[in-house]
Image (cartoon, rainbow, N blue to C red; front, side, top):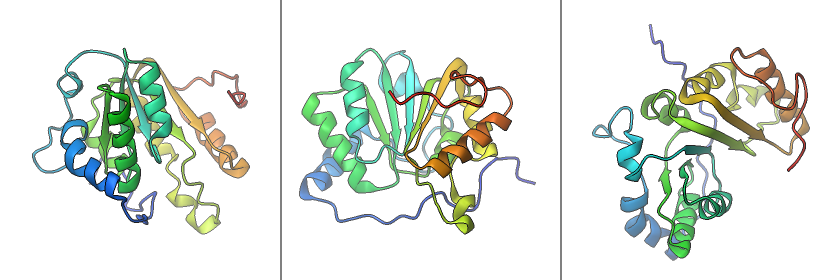
Length: 203
């Protein structure tokens, strides 16, 4: 029996546009420095101190899109470390270009399935903050099982946060917001910082 809380159903469909020449260059030249390749030789779990070359609080962003938000956060907080997971290569390439442009050293990117990364490669109680912003809401009922915020994954995230760590969820779909709140309200070991049953105000 498999004790891992992963799902056979993916929370994404890997559709992506063409890479621009700049994005391709970033993947070729910058990913070896700022990226983490997941293969049979990748340590399980990763040593985050070795990954960044220092000890600092780590923020994990799951599904960073084009990486603009992550690059902005990393530039504003050079004393913090940031790990981003994104399955679409153009987004990874775009983030790496922003990292190069801003001269950032506190960002690492993974182009892989988030559930597998969190389960197999993120150490227990190693993260200060986890961000899941504007994940695919999978609005059709038959696709709800693909939503990334599910009870098993939320429990997995809890084990990767340090005591007092923050999970920040954001969506612009009302029905998905309700789904996320329902999952979190039922999940043990969490405290809603906006109060029981409430949503946090938009920042």
